[in-house]
Length: 211
Length: 211
DNA sequence: TTATATATGTTGCAATTGCAACAATTAAAT
DNA sequence: ATTTAATTGTTGCAATTGCAACATATATAA
Image (cartoon, rainbow over all chains, first blue to last red; front, side, top):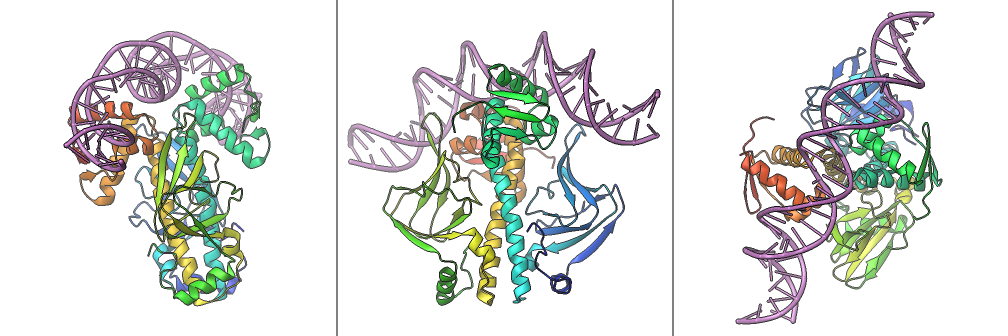
């Protein structure tokens, strides 16, 4: 039920979009879009294509914050795109719909399908919030070691397994933890030497028996 | 419109709560509550009283994560209370309502007031999400200096002023930034000596002219 | 297939940081 | 008013970290 229009017919979807005065926008591949969004209250739905939310630091180095495919949702209330260091790039020709958050809140469409729409949005936001809370919990640890351990603990608990498969590269992990990659690597090696973890490619096994 | 029952009559409020099978619970002052919540899908509404979400670290030191008053909302989808390091404490005699998130999503109450309820909840969650995004943005900076600067920049932008009034103690700020207080202080002093900021009690003036 | 880009390992070193341990001040409680 | 608790301000030092600069390996594109 990740889809904003789950359980809503195509016809009702159109009705909702119309009543929200939603804009459909089309972009060619490799375009930086929404650069002039000052509003901090929009929600965007990917109708088709493939986009990335990227961050550009002072060196000009870019990191991918989020990848967005069809039916994915992003917005200023869900990501940090309103900050000037962040940007949204189309990696394929893409079509997106922009909805103003205020419209959603103030809309008077009292129909079952609008109700469903609100519940879907609530669900999507709630999932994002969960992820964000997790990340804050991890990021507030003071050392790289503790950040790694927190990450392992949370992931392990969530999957109910002492074996973790990294869903991305170690470079990405360092980024997620907000630490230098080589420093992270050093710590990862320490944990390995102390026997707390084993690493085989992207498979990490935890040998800690606390909770 | 921070209130979950904004624009909803007392009668309709009761109808919603009943249809969500909400539990009303009462607690005496200074009780650690909800300790046995395994579910990661509850939302709690403070009906009356005063509560705190606190974190207890390995030393047994406690820090206040959040303060909750009448009509405030918290829950596992909004805070990290499902983690065993966190807890909820009543600081006054309190009455709270617990609603299961799934009930909200799966409820079939298709009435205008339930619609309003969903919109209110969406609004509350959206605000929390904004705050969380801000914090992540700040926490992902690698040095204390950059964390401070990010915090100042965001706060200044939000208030549209180069003058910031700390809404809490410096100890709390260090906690928010996830850094050691004395180390933060050292950096604050550096910024002061470099003329980038001025500090008078909780009033901080920024002398940086970039954006 | 070869060239190019990206990711993985590794290390020295200087800068930053946490930690512990204080004194001084301010706030809260009795 | 006086005790008690909490916050602010400061510092030395050891541990951690970011940074730069590599070599190697792996993936992607031409």
